[in-house]
Amino acid sequence: MLKRIILCLMIVLIASSTPCFALKRVVPETTKDEIVTKYLKNQNLDSVEGIWSFTVNGLYGEVAIIKNPSKEFYKDWNYTGVLVNGNSFGKNGEAKIVINKTAVTGVYTGAYVVQSMVGWGSQNLEAVNFVTSQANIMQANVPYLGTVHFIRIDNFNTTGGGSIGGNSTGTGFFVTPTTIVTNYHVIADAKKIEITFQNEYTLTAKVVGKDAANDVAVLSVEGLESKVVPLALGYTNKIKEGEKVYTIGFPLSNDLGTRHKITDGLVSCLTGLKDDPTVFQISIPIQPGNSGGPLLLSDGRVIGITSAGLNSVYYLRKMGTVPQNVNFAVKADYILPVLNVAGVNLPTSNIEEKELNAVAIMDSAKLAVVYVKAYRE
Image 1 (cartoon, rainbow, N blue to C red):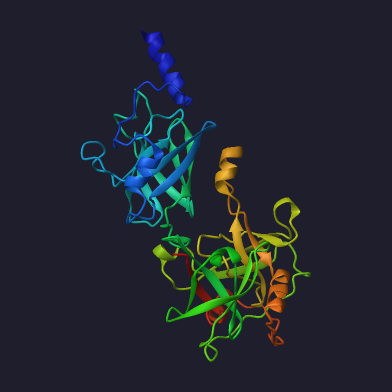
Image 2: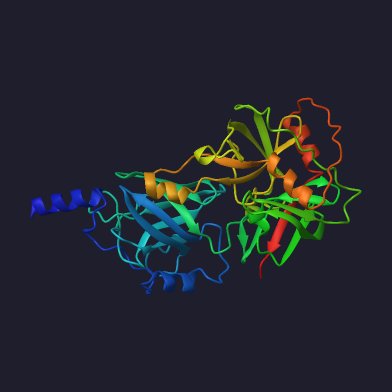
């Protein structure tokens, strides 16, 4: 009997496909589609809800984090992570994690439920912190298992700065008094595009140029000519690794609001994935909603458009790790051809080439950077 118990515990601790105890079933639905339809689709969701993937010792699973529906199990917890692709972790509909809000944005207290008879587990939860270190990335330090990474793979339009009800939000910036540059993916397939300036004026914009391959779009809007101060484009051929850069945008706007936010970092590399020459690799954190914002040198010139980060889900599955702060910006060189095709002539820049601090850069950028919302419904 003792040998059987020891063998069972050893199997559990390496995330075996044969759990000693079943997890608690908190929803009656047993398929992913059923769970998604009932608890996530067309619901008023909180920012943590959605489908999250996770990997433990090379084994892949998925949970749907939903408002706790159970009146019997885990009733003191705000959210339950219900298995929807359990594989070796349990059956669909069973609870794998439980989470509560804290007073700190992005930090949750919770527990990872293990099929174990000792110390903690499905019968005796030990709280661990779930920290959202990046948008749509969450990690928990779990006893016996170490760090478990969770990646949101479907937010059902509630990330607060990416998708909203089939729509999307992002950032753009004026390069002339009537011309805005943004990322193509922000406005792709939109039926209507609105820009908001200074958190006060909202106007309709139209697409006048686009380059889907390089993720560049040019918008036209009228009515703010007397209020905006366009940003000047800079040259990228003299940029060196290690240069200080900034971006201004509207990350996670559902949660953080639509006031400008500034972040800084370095040019990490002059090329992107597989030495792609069209982008810079940058260390600036990029969140949903930052896409389309200007990448600024310390003199205030635009040398790129902040665009994207590495696909965390792909790397988590492939390598068992989450890339930290590996992000990219489309080089300004690829903005000019789209402007030319759209018939936009940039004015001669008379910007003084002197180093500005972050406060001065922010003050200047606020007069050019706009919140972009694309409607697809």
